Image 1 (tube, rainbow, N blue to C red):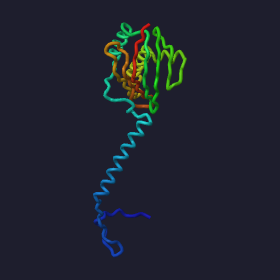
Image 2 (image 1 turned 45 degrees about the horizontal axis):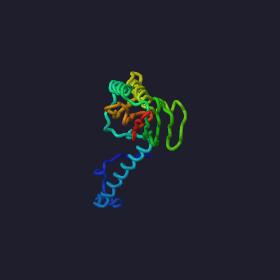
Image 3 (image 1 turned 180 degrees about the vertical axis):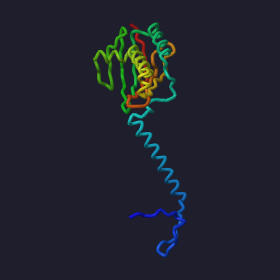
Length: 194
């Protein structure tokens, strides 16, 4: 059975169908709808943050170029202490990790992550200033490669580098796709006298 499409104005009024009356929306209903829309937007942003959306890190950080990172690495090699304690907060997708690292003679000696000590040499090396700078350099190289651009990856490496010693004060890698997004903030840097 098919139903002919007839505009409302063309329909004849019959005794069986009363005239259609437009319903006006009250001010109270309008505020209720607006409140529901705002609440939905807030919940969407919370879900996006919890599920690892692109807002892991502040967006006001400048992009780090390979030239800037090379200059910062040179500063660190020339002036950075060989003995230091470092505390960081790392946010990766929805997880927050607190790291305490003790570096002596340029090597990671003790790492505590969320109150659990790690003695794995590769993990100790990864979180030293040299290890972090090498990782950032690898990310910048990979994210700016032709292969990454052809694959549609749009990752950006942003952060703030210490103006005197060059170490990353704050660093974030974020973008599109299924890549892990994370943000590292140095909360304490303490040079140790030998």
